[in-house]
Image (cartoon, rainbow, N blue to C red; front, side, top):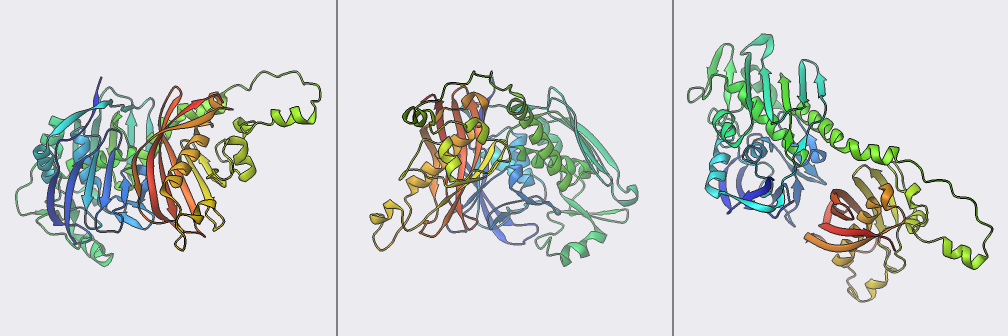
Length: 462
C-alpha cells in the first residue's frame, strides 16, 4: 500500500518571475495528510491560499495561472511538476508575489530544494486515479490523449512552425526518471514570438539565463543544450505539472502532439470528469424505491409527524437543483436560530454552492459585538458543515438521514463578516467511505475569501 508523502523541513529560494519580472521569495513547507499542494500568497492580507486544482485555473496563455476571487498565481506548472515527479502529495508553497521564481527555466532548482528538504511518509493512504478508458482532446494541430496503463508514462512530439526542431521523447515517470530525464529541460520560445510576448506584458523577467531562444535554425543559450531533445522534454515537464492539477496522482499513458498549457488543462478536466463518472452513474441510475400502497388519510396531528424535515430530500438534492429556504428545511433538521443556509444555488457532482444572508436581525449580534457586529467564525464553520451535509444527502443511500459534524481541520478565518453580507459557501466533497465523509469548504463575501476549513462528518439515521 502506497502512503502519502510531504517534505521533512521548510526550504526557501529567491529569484524573479518569468512573466511578471517581480522579485520573489518562495518557501516550501510540510503539510498535513490530504492537504494536497497549495500556494499561499504571503504578501496579501490574510495570506490567502489557492489549491492546485484544475477548477482553479483562470488562464493558460503561455503558462498556467491559478485564481480564487481576486487572487492570482501565475506560472505554477514547473513547481507542480517537481512535486509530482517526486511523488510528494502534500505541501504549502509560500510566495510573496504573484508568480514563483523562474530560476533557470526548468525544474532543476526546485528538485534541488526538495532534495535538501527530504521527504517523509505519512499515515494516510495514497490513492492515485487509474484511467479506465481512453480520453482525448484536440485543438488545431494539437492532440493530447491518455490511455489506460499500469504506470504513468508520457510520450510527446513537439515542433515549431514548418516542422522546425521536431523532436520526440517517451518515458515512464518515476522519481529517478523525472530527475534525470525531464527536470533539467528549460523553457524556450521562438525569436519571432518575443515581440508579441513583450507587447502583451509577458516575459518581463525573461533572459537567456532562464530560457532558450530559437532564431531560424540557431539556438541561443548561455550553455549547451542539456538534452538532445530538450524542447520536447520541457513540453513533457509542462504536461506533468498541468496534469498534477487533477488533485491526485494519475496512472495512464499520456500521448501528446504539439501540446500547450490550454490543451493540457483541458485533458485534465476530461480525466476529472472520468473520475466522477462512476458516482454520477450511481446517482443517475439508482432504481426508484418499491411502490408503497397508499395509507388511509391520517389525522392532522399524525400527518404533521409524517412531514419530517428530511422527507423528500432524495428528490430535492440533485445535480442542477436550486433550493429555496423551505426546501432547505426539508433537507436539514436545523431551525432558527441555528439554520446557517438560506438557499442552495448550485449542485454539480461533488460540489455545492449555498448562501447565508447575514442580517442585523441575527440573534448573536446582540453580544458579538455590541456596536461592532461581526458574525462568529464558528458559525461560518457550522455553515460549511451544514452545506456539506446537504451534499452527502445527494447519494441515494443517505436520503432521509442526518449528517453529524465530527471534526474540523485547517480552519482559517481571514476577514470579518458584517451585517448586510451575503455569505457564499462553496463546498467540495473530497472523500467518503461508508458513513464517513470529508469535505473542503470556503466561505466568501463579494468574491473575497473570509474563512475556510476541512470538515469530517458521519451520516446516520435520525
